[in-house]
Image 1: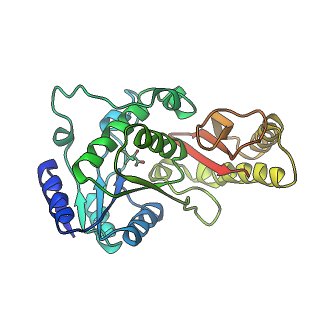
Image 2: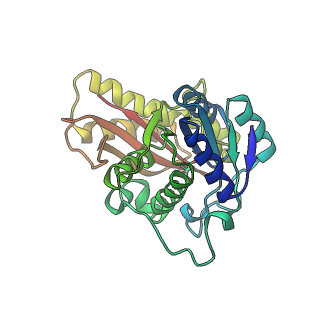
Length: 281
Ligand code: PAF
């Protein structure tokens, strides 16, 4: 596996691969790898001739009071994991490589980006769309692989790619969970022992809603109340950001489950803001 730090070298290498008739799968990441990231790389390996993993903690998707500075980083360990999971190229640039000092162009999907996480993180998805656009441009990837845990991110990127005719196919990969159900996340390292003990209740609550739907419940308010009651008893350290029943594709809130629907949430547990989602039907 080669490691590249400059946008120019990345673009040249990918152009060369395309010239040779090879396909490229891109795995955009912010590093600090766990089994969820490994599953994205494994999926990418099955899709294309060459796998490019980007490792970049993207400053523009963090708000001023968020954890950009303290976001966990371990490039040596990440380099090893990416190589073990079949990456051909690791792209690990400095922020100045992707953002010129006077960079002033943004890509945004404003409506979808203002829902759910966008309420408390108003600039987040603009940063994600902009950095993913840069990565798509530099690699001209045929596929880009994202985890289903960040469902809103993936739905927004699908819309961006559709609306702007980006020649890349977005591929989603199922959430990887710890044995007790907690969705793997680099931010789980922020959890104290007691927070970590309670955190699987986030998934258990969502899964309870899914079970109610399989038994015939279709009213969003009933599902939401059932989960909130459960969390009040079993997740006392969790502070609810949002819990919504949504249209899985366009992310709008539903009253009744009449279309493909998901339940999505964000819960603050101490220093960690945890998100999760489940397909309900
Ligand atoms: O999901 C992430 O890790 C980031 O949002 C992404 C897609 C790498 C963009 O910085």
